[in-house]
Image 1 (cartoon, helix red, strand yellow):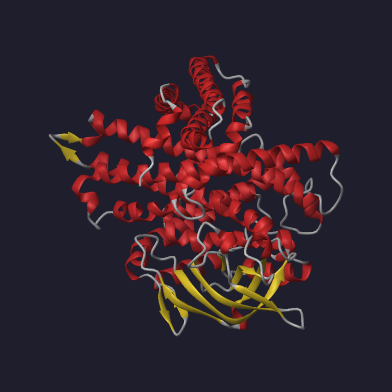
Image 2 (cartoon, helix red, strand yellow):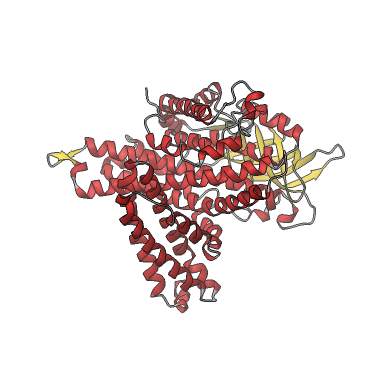
Length: 567
């Protein structure tokens, strides 16, 4: 009986981070929910015990059902019949297991039937599910679309739709169109208001994950004559009302159990969610931030599986009379894989904690006025969450792809065959650095936090924290790397050339990410000595990367940007 939570002590390490005590107290309104719900926690220890038990259930369902089903799902996949998606048989089994275990609507309030989990333990569940089956996480993980309904819909809509999600119904976010991919302000799906206050939607959506879901969030053009984001609103579409057909399912490289659909809206009835004109400007931005955090968790789950598959094979495979794990070329690769996994996971949960705090304050502000200190703290953590989300998604997904690549390399020729899970996870990994914003778009989102000093200020805060004497030398190395980063930022921003600044953006963002993750692993090692090896290995990797980028910047003539342009 496998359990994907209890077999990984690193998860418990992050679940019990010191900041969690503050997060849980805020989320539980100082545990006053216990007066209304007999299953609400009485104190922090009680809440942690609840998270622990639920994550054990997640781990059990993943280890005993979802992971063993992954190969069959990959082979069978979904299909379309009469405009409807028919899931693979094992996908249906997975969904039913999650429903029976009460694992839908985990982060939603108890009054709607949810578990009222903070974002952090919910993201931990996503991490576990992704390790079991990356594609299934897309179906299960889209429950976080309910967060948008909770934040922006009216109370009646919350009661009607969130309750259904908590009972196990599925969701999707219908944003992309054939002529509007990353450029969502070009969305043209037409929304027409009716005399009774409802709306009718007409047009086509493409690349919609789980596109035949029960409840859809739909970005559509509500303002006639407009062509930019100010004419877009968000709508809720209920599949029970009809009017939307699945034209086709994309034939994808990976995540084959997750149906990626082309949808045709034919006078489909829908409800306005929130206010008109704010669909892209406000609501999609909130939706995408949550989605990117989910892909960061998905990436970590894939990295976890890649490392475990590679490690197991390296221990078992013998060449020249000994296990290949004894060869330096192999054990170095494995140690770097583990360091990248640990670094991306530490960044994921640091980001999740920051998201937790500012979102809880936003929710609390609907109940009462925040104090000046609370408003200040909320703004601070919102800024940090905004800064770390693109790093967690961008760098986590790149590490996920690198670990999947190295997993196959360690397997050698066997890794190229479908006999081993690494072939499937390699295909599944590739999408993580593309959807919900490519790595290049994450750099665009992150660079302003380089130029405004958000990252450097955060690094200096980490630098000010005390560490055990045996870790001081490692901390000193990180301080030297930080100085090189600060000088590189100063050198690039001193040049008033937009093309040059954009050209160097990726290098500066990666340097910031490398140093931040190195400091987070240092903190992990300070709390838990089992992270010391990864902290040291990752510091070596980060130092090499920071040095490479800093040297490139120092020796580069801004005029040379032109020679990189391709005709």
